[in-house]
Image (cartoon, rainbow, N blue to C red; front, side):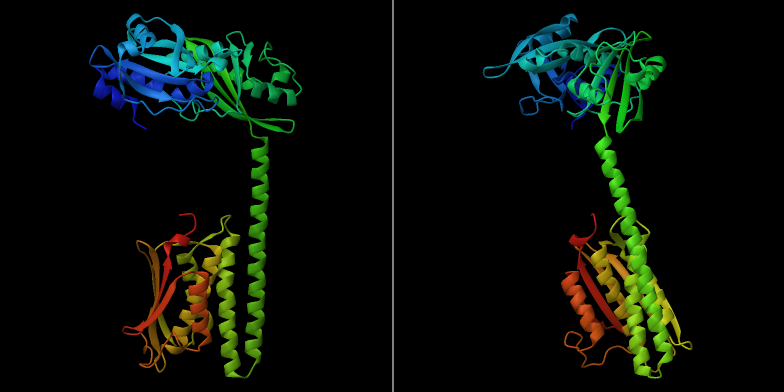
Amino acid sequence: MVAAGDICRKTTALAPAQIAVVNTICSILGLASDLSHAQVTVYTKACNETKLVIVAQVKPNTSFVQQKASSLGTMINAYEEPLVWRTITTGEVIGGQREWALGMWMEMQVYPVRDTSGSVIAAVSFEASQEEGRAAGHQLLVETAQLMLATVKTPISSKMYRSLSAGDGIIIVDEQGKIIFANSAADSIYKVLGVGCITGRRIYERQVYMAIAQKVMTGQETYEAELLVGKMTLMQRGIPIVLNGVSVCTVVIMTDFTELKKKEKELLIKSAVIQEIHHRVKNNLQTIASLLRLQARRTKSEEVKAALRESVNRIASISVVHEFLSQQDAEFIDVAEVTKNILELVIQNMLEPDFNLQTSFNGQTVILPSEQASSLALVINELIQNSIEHGFTGRQEGVIGVEIATLVDTYKIEIYDNGIGMPPDFNPQASNSLGLQIVRTLIESDVGGTFAMYNDKGTHACITIPRKIEGGM
């Protein structure tokens, strides 16, 4: 959205201090529009003294206004907007009607905007349908919104002056603490609280639950707090309108957060349950791995021991993923963190005591959904195991490294060693090795990526994954 100040600087003769005044009111125009149930437009004189410029315009969230093309920055002849021109030139508050579209008339009220010296520098128009304009309390809402624009001071809390929704309750309290207006949403909230009619009551009555309004009136500062009343959760926001040091009225906005809080609580419970499930799955996998280790120690067959060690590592690699998921409430995993843990696990379980292995890890953060991360964990486990088992035959030392890089459209994960490399006639795509079959299946089917192996001062296994499956990105 083009800033009002930028339009003013380019098209008007307003001084910087005057532009600051216009910017201030424009910063809360959304709330003023929602409060008044009207489209709000800010006009200033153009450098050409016979023209007007639209420097800001907002449609309400609380009422329907026929959609029209944006007219920000548009130059308008004075005779096309006679009510606005009269307000800017005389400083009068003008009310009337204008033809919004062919045969469609809107109620229009125009108020002057003054700088600190009292000079009129702009005009604000409120335009609403004739049906809206005739509704009970509409005039009071427009006057309150106009007063808010005229008295707002910097700095402004954007949170406190945020826009409204159609379901928000709006209450206006006069300087005596009497409720002089409540919309249907506010009435509905208070009916649930056992108060039949809120209008006419005073904020000091206990059953009205208006301690926030009292605090705002006394302190003349905006305030917001959550309120628990019976089974209801309400968010109350109070905005004072202060004129010449006196709180002339207070706007109280009430939002029923009961269902939202209920859903949040349900989500927290579900999240805790899911984390506990991951924790138990991790523990169960570790128990299975421990049983297999026990079985490996009891068997006398070296072939069976090797097979059991491989199974232990596969189970442990899945366990790592569940351990990460048990510690967070999102179903996404950082592949780099998982890879570091798997590298350590495989070395602990597979490495012979007299072998001197160095590791190298260079990984950028890659976030994947847990399903893809689990498959990738198994793949990385298989490839690291493969290097330890076959890459260093006849050697007593070596290096295994992992590199994870983020490219334009893909992620690239490379596991390499400086070992003896693959035999010249070895074809990894045609190999009957169970480990490589697992790798190919998981990469191509579960992750939707590609897999290749090649020799370069050792064996390199390269995994490429499309970035489209990245979690939440």
